[in-house]
Length: 152
Image (cartoon, rainbow, N blue to C red; front, side, top):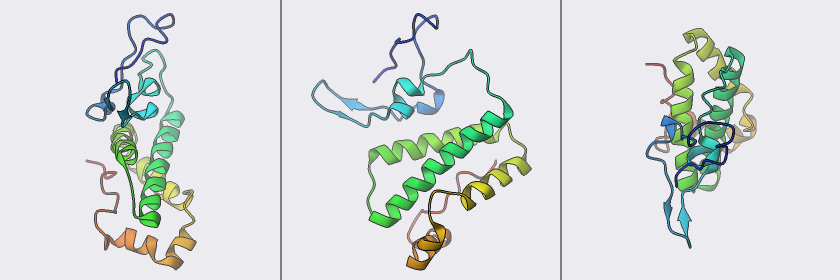
């Protein structure tokens, strides 16, 4: 799917998807569409170049995407299933987090990761009692450790 120009009266030209959406598009036809995720490859993923974020807003954006990945990872380890939507969200989120990390100091980024892990929507104590979270941390069930967040 291509971005629409639903805001063409506000922004000159057609709305453009973020570069972070590359390769995460939906496919299908008029009857069936697979992989449409508005915030990843739909109109909600379009850039707004006239809006410049502040440092605080950048941190909030990174927190949001870290939370989405943690939620998806926990869902996967709880229910042992995932789909193309979660794959697209996690890939997009990794890209957004890494882009935000380019503009944060290493200390800011590490603090962000620490606090987001500690205050995640996941009830870590409950997950530890079931053994799920300890398997996630130690990578005993596959590629479950979020290493893509590491700064380059």
